[in-house]
Length: 126
Image (cartoon, rainbow, N blue to C red):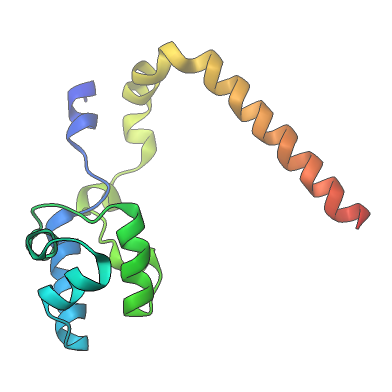
């Protein structure tokens, strides 16, 4: 598999996510116009979300989860490709793709591990 293939993978099925948002809106009796007013976005933006032409930004996903009474994850529909493949299938390509940043990433992981360890110790002391 080539690096190009990795770039073609999507984590979120935009169309299915949009359809799900639309179905929740319908179930709750919320129109595009009402939702656009709640979120302070255009009616066209909401329409694009419902039809899978685009996705809300993270802030609007958070607001949608509050309006719909669910978690953000509940609104996201993953692509079938990712749900059937393992990271191991892409390990060589992922390694190649990130090779240039390897040292920086290892250093960052170690920093996070150290931070986590220190936070864990603080909890024990409390």
